[in-house]
Image 1 (cartoon, rainbow, N blue to C red):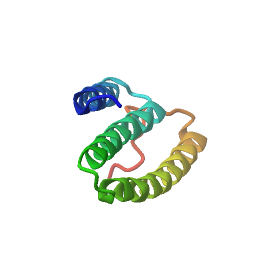
Image 2: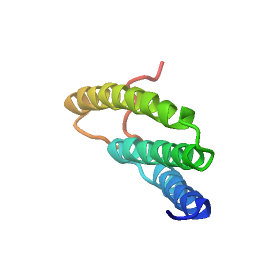
Image 3: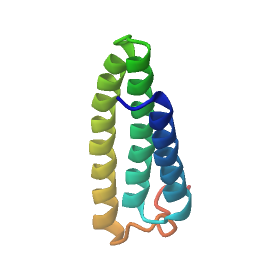
Image 4: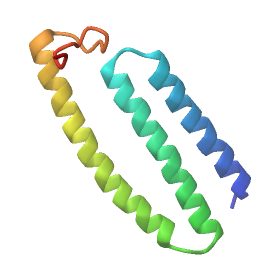
Length: 100
């Protein structure tokens, strides 16, 4: 088994890539993918620490996070599809339907 440091480094790299993708892109679908990448980086860290400490609580928490993430993606993509049908773009700079 790889040492814990390798999992920490991989998780930090994935989280950093997610932040870079979230901050630099304007496509709403890429933003969702970046958020999911950051969430999975945290899940990897939870599983790594859970395995290192020989405690199953972190792995159980990851299962609940997967369930919540699946619901988040379903709702987010439904909203994105509705917006695309109305304004024909997924560029977040052009979406101004929620302005008062």
